[in-house]
Amino acid sequence: MKTNKQFFAKGTLLSFVAASTLLFACNKSEVLTESPTVTEEEAAEVMIQSMSGQSGGLILQTESTASVVARMSYACGVTEDTTIVRQNASGASVTYQFELDIVKQLNCEMGLPQNFVVSADAHTTYSGPRMSSDDNSHTEFMVTGFNPQDDYLNVTIDGTRRGSQQSKVRAQRSFNSELTVKSTDIAIDKSTGLIGSGTIEVHFTGELSTGKTVEYDAMIILKGNKEAIVAFSNNATYE
Image 1 (spheres, one colour):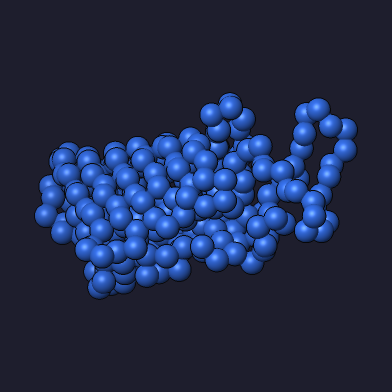
Image 2 (cartoon, rainbow, N blue to C red):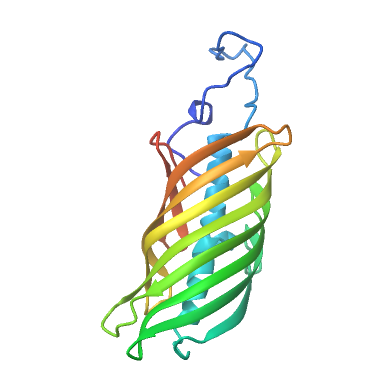
């Protein structure tokens, strides 16, 4: 994961309940104290992997949902169920697997498709160089853009993803997290079935085994090619 800030400059300042002052390591002889809560960098890694198509994240799940919708062989007002299972290609640096159970309904006016509503429940696991995770999520999708003259399907998203993570770097600690995601501007190219652009608002809550919790807000910028950038309000970015 690349970032535009060094690790020890990220996140909130370390606080100590029993101390009345803040101490910083100013030279090599001083010892840095481990953060007592989930750091911004760890939260960013959770956000990136929960989105990345390379770890079976929301980008791939959205594209998979859109591929079902694009067939358009559905009757207006009829609810149908579908299960989608995906896993990583052989030899991938990040391994993942997800099972996506979706309930979909095509809504019409005067017999013409207006929007496709999809309710999706997923169980996703992944393991990468920096983190492994086991998550469950529920996402509501609405898909529009069925006019043949439209080049893109437009997707709105409202969802929650909860899971447990194990970091493989620095403190190598485990924690639980919850992500809420919202978007109204995701565009999927009809010719390729891939996300071309979009942004997603994310709210992160992380909790250590000590009960210490922390919250972060960020904007996910979808770059295409199943990749994303996380931008925090303090101008730190990760990808």
